[in-house]
Image 1 (cartoon, helix red, strand yellow):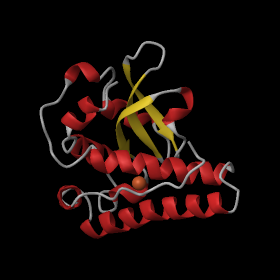
Image 2 (cartoon, helix red, strand yellow):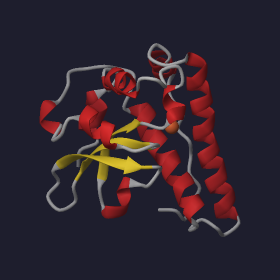
Image 3 (cartoon, rainbow, N blue to C red):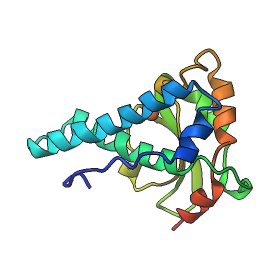
Length: 169
Ligand SMILES: [Fe+2]
């Protein structure tokens, strides 16, 4: 997967505006630039034959996670309760420092499971198929830093569940 350049698929205007209602709007723009940075750094590493380093892997995964993140936000719809094996807010609270909370299909049986990801460790490593990813890095909730739980709760309210459902195998 890491033998070709990555493309940062930036958020739609609708998603930027939606996020700007729950965190600092200027912070959303910084967040977008960070996403582009992950892609740029990975692509530079790839061109230098260094795509397998820990840092390059982290940048690759950071880019892919953000591609999924923007896409699964911005058009709130009907929640799909059968997909949530654990409470997203509860698992988010277990993430120490920077990371993600994900809903992914488990390779062994195709069941969707809610799990935490530390840093930018990529959920694909164990064959998981991410269906929903929520960014818990501090850069994601500038303006709401004193209350991460409120950020997570509001973020879940922005999930486009039709995108989540469409990602199922
Ligand atoms: Fe992020």
